[in-house]
Length: 199
Length: 199
DNA sequence: CGTTGAAGCGGATGGCTTATCCGTTTCAAC
DNA sequence: GTTGAAACGGATAAGCCATCCGCTTCAACG
Image (tube, rainbow over all chains, first blue to last red; front, side, top):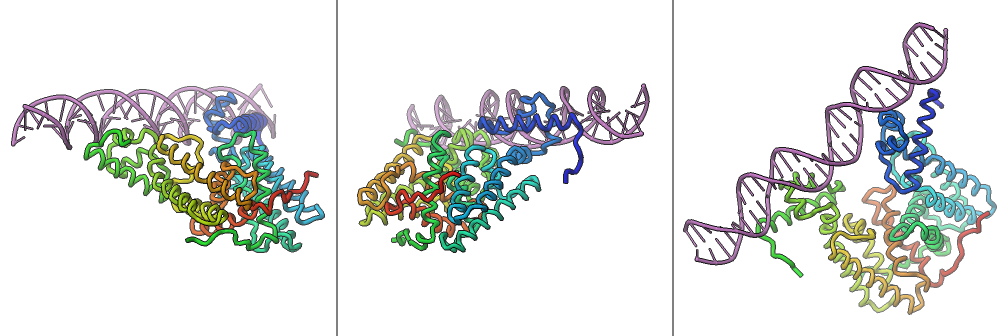
């Protein structure tokens, strides 16, 4: 799995680069490998050797966040009430995406640069599908919902909260928006047909 | 209003550029002014003279779509039922954003390059606020909702439908997701407190 | 219908970002 | 301590963006 044990200096540089990448993401500075190199006082070529593209670095930076998400999913799977498990996972997932700006783009992307990222995201989808299935089996979530829908709605809520909003407002906004969406996911709300027919 | 009447050749080039820009947007090709110039067989400088930045061109391309949105808002204001007016506007707005990829980024942007765009978007916000106000006055929409929320939720629904989805699927997805969100906007769904407390 | 000057045109070019090559250095195995 | 493979990093090539400036086109006016 761990293909080749990195040399000591290489490992040090790798860590340094990821660390600086993390800072850039946290500060909202666009990830540019040359800038990361300068900031880390490391040669440009070294950075490119470790991370051939910005996506590679971004996914590496996002990894802890994604693992955190998987952890939350598994915790939710241990809950008694199927609805609480499902809703709780959504809430936690959204909070994680808000707290770590690198997670959102990786989570929403259709392709991944690193196979390990694809694998992580796959596990995430599987877990959310499982949570959804249980909730549907309990009859509390509308049965036409798919695990793809769940992922999309999470991303949509996060995105909605970032439109015209300062970072400080976002946590509150996602909470409200998730609440609204959850109302629509409940089996009791199914086929409410709220949309007026076109004139 | 129409500050300076353009010379005939200038007008012709302007139109050509916007046309090519439109094609780029429709085909999902990133708007790059040099590329637009080459594609239109027009000098780079000419393109930059007419449109100093990509945003300028994008907003010009988006303008018909935005006007379309305003039209829909006004049409909705003429409807009898406050809920139908509100929901119908959301549906129309989302459909327009899906049909014209240039609208979404301009609509969601916090700042605008062209004053006329800012003015259009402002009118749009005003109209959606009016629709929201009427719906709230009728007691069919939860009163804590703001017009900002409405804009954000529209963007969120559109975004959600673009995650992991081919263009063909998007219309169907937005319809479903809007339905769910609308369920959460109804006054009857207010403070459903669907979210489980944190463990 | 010819002149004139302002408005417009476009390619060549400079500045900036991105990514690669290759000579030099560092590590660790023996 | 020697050795060679792995890693390093600066110089530099490749590519993108935007501007400058000499030339052309338009239309107003005589």
